[in-house]
Length: 268
Image (cartoon, rainbow, N blue to C red; front, side, top):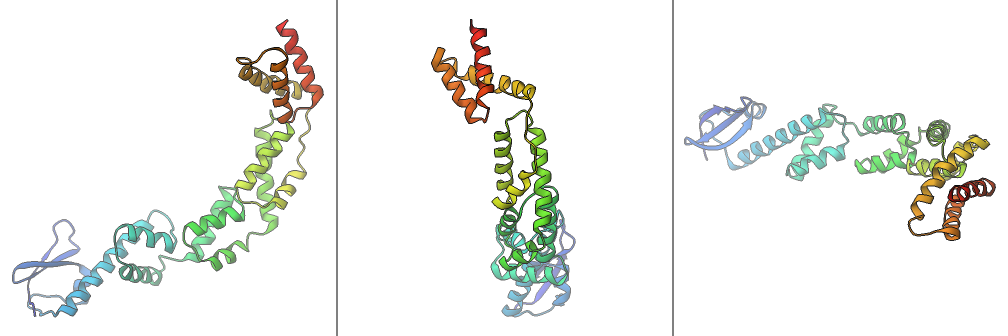
């Protein structure tokens, strides 16, 4: 069996040590592994012990790599496992490193999921479906997803969705009620709310417009359509195309007719 002839401290990393057999480099280990296995000059090592030492050192390196990764923000177990796989650690090494992270409370998928949900609600204004997708991407257990999301009540969902709907309505005030309604519905659906809750979030909003607002809106949107089609169409065909576009955007027929009458006078 090989005998340790020399142990030297690493130059780049003083917490690692180089082990030599017959003055030839054999392997390097972390200081904690060196102490645990009582590696000293003159100690005889069998092949089984060498393999065990190297495995333990790989676990230690994976553990330290995971700690560095976790230092930026909370991570799920799934994210940590994926990162260690990218660093080409084997499954057995990753399993042991993850166990150590749990023992020292550096990993906790329950806490991570709860924190993720709170962040997604507060900053992302997301509904349960979108949050569940985020959890799934991070490898959170399905039952845990359900348990955490159960605490996101419909009352809270409605409050968040209403706040977002009001913000969109204010931002899109120069759009028709139909356009605003569609914008809110599309956004809330994309954010992960169900249809029934979206309907409740919208029903109390007031989308009514006065005559001046209609005039301002159609001047902007109508002129845009007019410029778009006037390069290819003229006369009746142009008016019909613009009229069709304005109908689709939700403008009332009387507002459209007034706009087109004014455009016709401008052309004359």
